Length: 173
Ligand SMILES: [Zn+2]
Image (cartoon, rainbow, N blue to C red; front, top):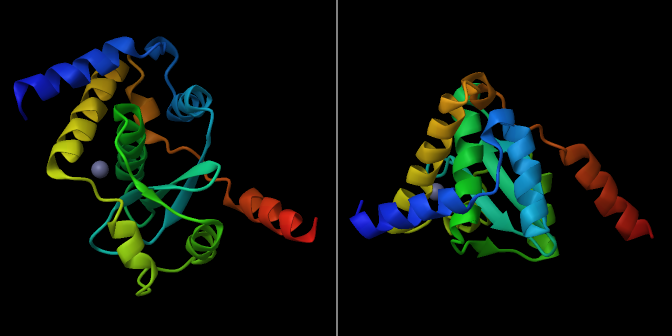
């Protein structure tokens, strides 16, 4: 990674007004959602082979899809990596309500021809990937420094069931 990139990521981390001595991944996700004023919904899925995680921007919420057929440590890493993209201010794929529902409804392996390219569009450029991954690493270092490493082995729970309730209530309402 280029030097100026590393510096940008370090500056980003310095700016974070987050107390790592109380770190939990779930707390970090809540903090980030408040900071961005947008709810983050975590969606466990069997992802296509080409994508292990995807951040998809819906109309009023952000969705983080992550591979569920992988060890928890890896799942938590994917969740943190996608949140790092948000913190870096990277662009990502935006979807309308119908596409959002199609993605959420699809509970098996996401291999449908319509959805896989959509998730692939969330894959970032090499430079953005490096930036997100090094921010992830810096965050992990902070967490280790505060002896909260075990918190990196817990995923943010998914609240997909209530997402559907919301959706159907809106349809009915
Ligand atoms: Zn990425």
